[in-house]
Amino acid sequence: MSDERGALSDADRKLTHIRVPFVIGQVVVLLGLLVAGLGPMLWLLKAAISPTQDSVRSPLGWFPSGRVEWQNLATAWQQGHIGYYLTNTAYIAAGTAVVSLIVCTTAGYVLSVLRPRWGVLLSALILATLFVPHIVSLVPLYLTVLKLPLVHTNITNTFWAVWLPPAASAFNVLVVKRFFDSIPREYFEAARIDGAGSVRVFTSIVLPLSRPILGVVVLLSIISSWKDYLWPLLVLTNPDLQPVSVALPKIAKVTELNIQLAGLFLALLIPVLLFLVFQRAFLRGVGLSGGIKA
Image 1: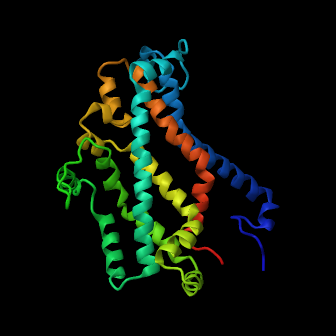
Image 2: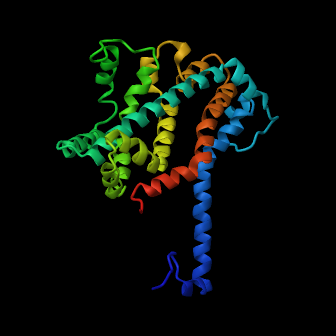
Image 3: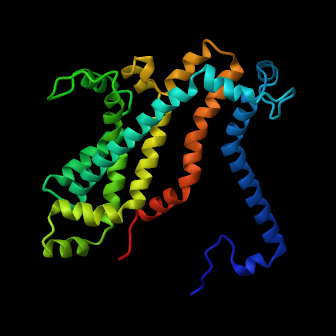
């Protein structure tokens, strides 16, 4: 059987009239993806280090027409208190990731490994929530945090108000469950024969085998909470607790355009760097989510 896996066979690659247009097409597509992906980030960097007049006169320019003002980044950090708001954002993102891991792994373990009688129905209900628009659940969710069930406590203006709602992400639960489904059942049976209980199976077998998908959940949770605007705006009315996504529009009212864009660039830089650093683990986790081999 042939090992050819590309779009062109080895015989086609030897033909110049086929190989050359194909390579040109690949280069064009690659350049288009680079422009679409890096273009907005590069433009934002250009606008952040340019005078305000430069961005107003030629908003579509890719290079500063005047002097380069690197001090805009320092001014945004100090005058706009970007560092303080980024610290709040980091607390929110880290807490969301931790709570998401707890909820998603335990829910996925119950549905995939323990498999209760009502597990199929619960999985279907979780899947159904993906079709509910986020804006529809906004009011009930806000009323819930105003008076938390069971404890009857108002948790607005606390980080718990932004940690708990995103933790019950149906997408993350189903992704983790799908990964747990791919773990060979023989592992669980051997552990139970050795006397391991459900908690021991979860901590000693399931979690160590699930590190790639757990990294994916952490990265998705961090990026999602980092860019969230509407929910923190509703539940964190105290300016001292607000993340950078909520603070930036307020900074825009009291600073010039170039300082605002510099703050926006600093706010976008961290999640982009996180993805670049952990992209291999992210792609590996996504690739393994379909199954693992014993």
